[in-house]
Figure 1 (tube, one colour):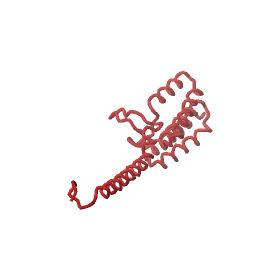
Figure 2: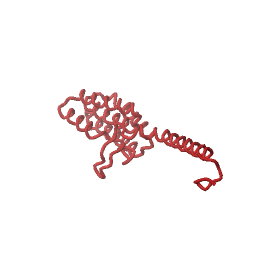
Figure 3: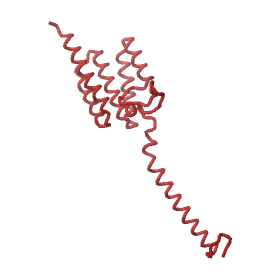
Length: 168
């Protein structure tokens, strides 16, 4: 018997330890690779701090709605308040591109939804249906039913505004 209480020779124990280490290394590699897709999207383009609970994450998937991050929303609102709708459009298109790069479906949908509002303000109502259709499709694809319903409500509100603005 050797020091380890085994009849095996030390070189055999070393081989077993080596095999176990290879297995552990391989197991860790598999686990690491399995988590990479989730790590890539830790903070997608629409990540933000929830005003209710303070959690940072993809706001659409955590709380049921695709929303713009506060800094983007504030910038767009400020530009719209100044009447700089082209600037607001540019900021939203830039955010949408970032959301596309990070494959953030809720962020993309939120950008399309906000673009629809900007296009209404710009008087480009012919662009609005495509934006809302894209937002609906992305929310549906991501499984975000609350965001999908929000787009439907937004569509009805825009239609109602257009009816009210028609000359009688």
